[in-house]
Length: 390
Image 1 (spheres, rainbow, N blue to C red):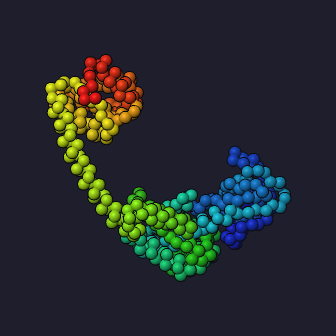
Image 2: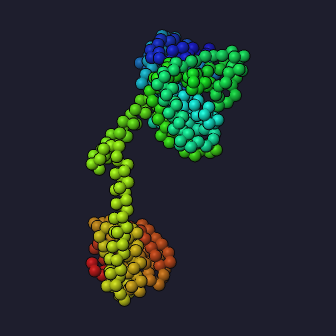
Image 3: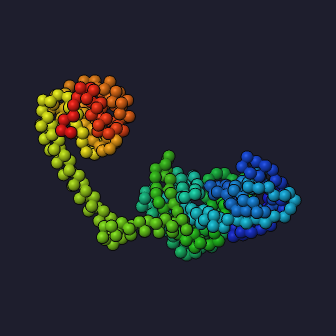
């Protein structure tokens, strides 16, 4: 016997009673069927409702051949009347996301002659796939019109047209449909075949915000938020922008310009630092001219800096330059041999003795070690290389 679907009769119903038909143990709990239910089963990209049934937690709901199965955390007695309670915040969130997706998709498809070929209502965001490329400007125009639909508070219309009426109806659908078709419409925005739960009026969606538009297969994938999710997200973004504005001593609306100025100043400072670093490395190298193999222990620096110093020193000394930069027991290293000699055997011994990671070829190696300065000096002393300028 098919389960009576109370969620279609009233998607705002949060409590109901029903008779237990079956209760069977499963890998995830107990599978319970009822004569009727307000629990929406997973389907059409919308997750299942959660809640309680006879006091037992309902953690999943799915439908098979018209029968709805409730996954419960405890058994319920067959033949008894039980009370069901829907997790309303979860259900209403799904209604906001799903209805918002309909409104946006309907407008995008009408404006730009595309089709919605994928929909997923995730725990954090909603993703929608379309079969043609869309520009960010096109998406923002559809977002603007979608929110205007929300502000007009258009009533949703849900119908089950006759086959004759359906044949003459212009509606969206991801696949060919047979049998009774449920049509969900937001007049002026969308008309679509859908099995999900929806708000009664567009205004209940609250807000639609598109987060991203990325190339996906032959079209694009949008990431959106609606309703409470959009409000929370934009509130967090504002709080973050407000904090950044305080750090930059500007108004929140001026953070972009302030960050651009700081970015330009930072780039100039990095360029100047690189120039000074190159000059310093050149002077260090000149002071070690003709020394042959040398070991240098340096303060912390970027791996690229260690490489440049080792390269400059090796050219000046004519031998192996081993540069270790860091403090405590954490150092990065760069090894350069002026003649391009194979130093892989040395690197293997070094990594083994000093808990190192790294390698290279053609007279160059780079990596890191977990060893202090004394251990590094002791290793190279045994290799016949003494520390210069330590």
